[in-house]
Image 1 (spheres, one colour):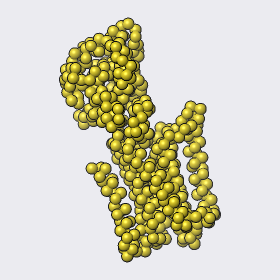
Image 2 (image 1 turned 90 degrees about the vertical axis):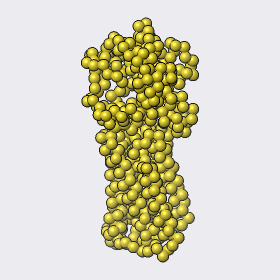
Image 3 (image 1 turned 120 degrees about the vertical axis):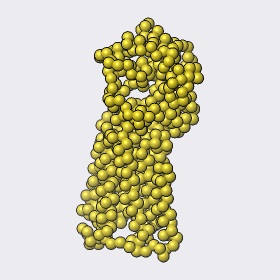
Image 4 (image 1 turned 120 degrees about the horizontal axis):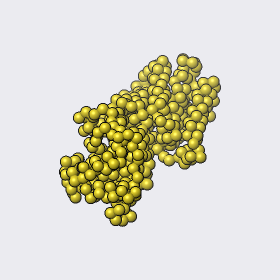
Length: 473
């Protein structure tokens, strides 16, 4: 429903633009200088506000996706502001080169930065260049601000820039639309994986900007078709901010906006079949839930030890470890307040939590060759007695990888501090595993884990204090 509404909103302006161009009698001159100033100013302020929201929601500008997407919004806002401020009759009496050229440069710069936000930029995240992202951001902001200052001080300094030539206008349109559509498609692909409103809203906003560029190129000056690109600028940032507001209301945490953008890269790499990015995505899942930091690594280590002890081959062990690392993939998109809640979950919150095995499985199943990992993820909350979820499988009907992960996951959860309880000492955790062996957990794998603990092959974290209660994970 949401996707149909979003793409329907994209189709309407293009249908209207084509109608105005095909039937020139409908494309009438309209508007005034003051109205132009206010519309452009509103679009510029929305772009700047969108940049500010994104930067404030980010943990760090070392995430190049955040950095470049923020620069895309900032560049469009600042460069387009020149177009508004140089409206005849506001500051300058006559039309200037800055007035005519700035819209083209605004969309082009936005497209360049948006495209950079969806590709890997070598050197910006390496340890030796720990300050590089901040320097790039400050350098770009300084350059864009300098453009604004020069354009206001010398409004005709771009008189030689050939945007008045039709061939050059079409070249800029092809380049700009290509960049914006490329970036929009990549964000939309991520939305198809994680279903986060923040991702879809960015994709729709970029598509609106691509449509605005087409209107700028083919619209008739000062007529309805020309005014459409101004309206589409407003629509672009309204769509982005509306999606982010929805994300904020759903997650109750401003960081959810930036986290949805950050997850875009690893998700899109998976969509192209690059399983090497599973580790990166696992790290991003943990950043989403810092209360369980390094949980997936410990679960993977416990699962590997169990699988190795029972004689699994190298290929199956690799599959098991990857499944364990990704077992909480479906938590992407869950509101952080649910994951960190100390009080008992409501029925609605518990139902949301229970969806994560299916969601994680669905994400994996979209990636060629990862179907087995998807099955392991789907069933890691099944119970050996058939009382688990999502499918109520029982005993050996549960995939072996899922049964191993369930044991490893339960043991690490018991011996780790969680928002709702303290960590359990190893001896208590061992007793709890033995208690639920044969009901919640496969007794074979429970006994293997206990054997590994007894002979020193595994060393759980030391609990700071005994847990007050036993809680099923």
